[in-house]
Length: 160
Image (cartoon, rainbow, N blue to C red; front, side):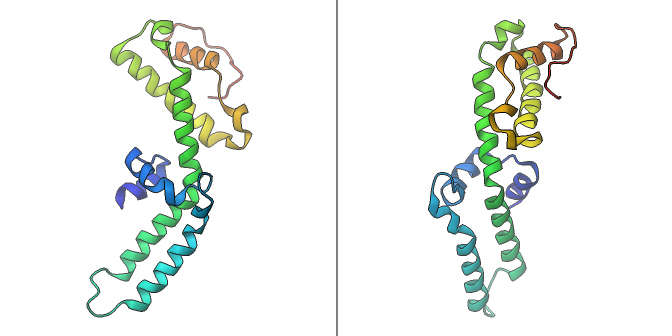
C-alpha cells in the first residue's frame, strides 16, 4: 500500500504495479475499465454490510485501500503518459553517448538529469498541448550539451 501511495504522490508507478493495474484501470485500452469506480463502491458496500465481530481488517484500513485505488484510477492517464514519454525519451536519446562523447557513470548522470527535465516538460508542465510539448531530439541534445558544459547557454525556446 505504501508503494501505491507513493506512486500517487510522485506520478511514478513501478513497472510491476503498472502492469498489474493496467487492465482494470486503463480506460483507453479497455472501455470496461470505466466501471472500476462503481465496482469499488459496490465492494465497499458489501464489506460494510458483511462485517461482523470476526472481521480481521479494520474498516478504516479497507477505506484507505479503496481511496488509494480510486486515486490511482483517476490518475492512471498520467501514469500512462509518463510511461509513453519515458519510452519516447529513450528513443530520442539513442546515440547520445557518441554525440556527447560520454560513457558509463558520466553518461548515466547526464541522461538521468535530462530524463527528469524531459518528463517534467512532457508530463507536468503542459500536457494539454500534446505533441507540441515534447522536446525534439535536437533540443534534448542541446540541453544535454549544456549539462556537460560543451555548449554555450542560450535560449532554446524550451522552458527548463
